[in-house]
Image (cartoon, rainbow, N blue to C red; front, side, top):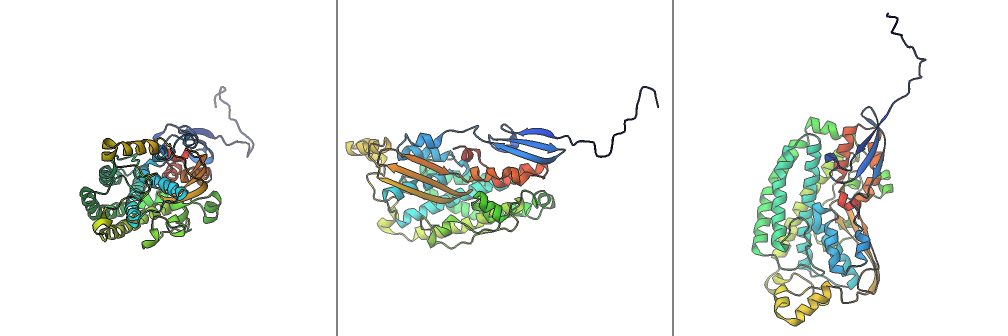
Length: 409
């Protein structure tokens, strides 16, 4: 041994573990949104993690205190923008509960069709992105064409695709035209075949299963303690679904099952969402058949009789002064709303999406709180990824379907 080299011997057990701090986000392609995770790594294994939200905080709840009811609808679009009509209709139902408006059955069934289409597009995006994050891009590209077909249906109904501002307090802006039903027929024929192919590509794929099974798991007890709802809770074995436990929009008229998992891991979340897509297809078909049963004047009903809160038809607004005045009064909130305190929730694609509305009798809400499922899931993220590999954290984030717009209300 050279005189310039020395052999250093250290006492056994004296070496300290050196960890690395990694910023996963706020601008990182794998986060699928603008939020940050400060992760401490021992090699590639996660020792601890801390979440940070607020990067796209838009103060929706505070803005809502200065907006009349209709102007709040566009805020709800920007919560979970993968299933915007669900947010819109959840808000309109909350307003209807406060205002005492009862919607006709046909309106309920039309809403069910749109809400379940929204659920499908949301789950379609979530599960295909889980595939992308495991290295399989083909499935994502394949099913996206069917999301586009759903967006074409939205476009026929309201003129918008992503942030739809769909519907009205009491129903819809207009009746569904023939093109809507033609496109829906096409979707119901073509999409189930494609979804079956998508599941065949992933469900028993050895690489995909190895990446997901056993990672990001949460027990039913821990999920309930955090306040989990929706697919992430059902994947842990709890069959809670707002559509069944607190029916709204005549969901009690439909037959469907609630898919549940057992382990609460990434794979179970993938499977539960996949099965929910099949249930949504079934519900849409049932609602479609119920809508076909309405004949004559009933087949033209698309909103409740609530002239003080339902916007007049555009043709009348352009041609009669009375309709123009009412349009202005409703949009600008020139009419006081009743005093009251209501909570209404819907089974959003991500879980229980709730609106807690307090009115002091003025023209805008005194207070409005959005119950955003993603915000609740994100609290558990550090616990779910601890002692897992860094690559597992990406899969966990995707399978939870964390939407940044829903985090920062």
